[in-house]
Length: 430
Image (tube, rainbow, N blue to C red; front, side, top):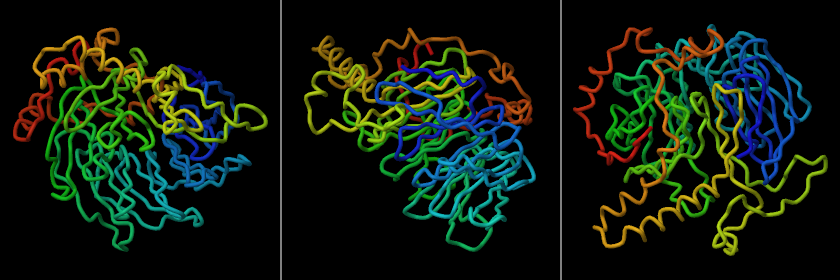
């Protein structure tokens, strides 16, 4: 598991779509890019400081030629990934900007501390449109390309849906108050459903066909907040990519979770006691950039099984990596294919050892019978208390600071919803 020390806390991470480069946004305001190869070797290839204030969000355009950066300084920076030049939109928002998302050619979105969302044409100096349906900070964006809709989650406990084709500066839908901060969002089941991570560790499932007013299911299990999530690439072998997601929690674990049916597939990465800030999946590209002259990858796999190596249909030009970053100032790259191969092998061995038990019980136990105890940790009372700068406290508000309802009240609210029961072993020891 390659680890890259970047020298400052990392707020966001994104992969280049065509080259083997991963970019990080730092507390110091720097944006650093690291080239890597399929063996996990790396070197610094990009280092720009568009602002002296922290960089909270990053997003790349479709070909990776432009990198959009936002942060505490309220500006939108457009970075050329080849020349390292900066095109600055000073005071793009009235308050600090938390998230930025490239949507389609010549359109991107930004969201700030006060819940304001703006759409931008990067060729213009001013925003194209502004939305004010939220009153607390924007935590994440999900782009539904088929419908040309942008879904935004907020610390105010609601999500909203914006149709970017409409000229009206208002959302086309907004959920009821979920009585919990909505922190992250990802599509599942081929876009048929959407999973939302919350401050209390609940995964709320929305079904767009039934409307966005309220969630249809709630999946408990994470002991602390689900701060970040991402989907898996469809090309990843040996895993149901439409039902499996990766979650990053403030307890320091990156988990692989299968949704509906809901199972813990294992812990992908462990950052110790440091909260996970952001995760991203990328790689499997033919243009490796660690060497000065790009060379063709060897096609090897880290810890891949012999069965996988012998399967020609699964061979690709590189390795799929998950990048995870947190408060520990380390960019961690984990080989996803190796993880799922090991998880699949462990499940088969566990199934063989438990032969003769009830088949339905086996299916449930096999998936959760991973050695999660070795990753166990006692969650701290307040992870935010260890952050190095007031910027982090303003970015992630606690319920006490916001004057929100206590957890007991929220749990009472949740009993009115359909809650998917997961066996007690789901997060034993975590």
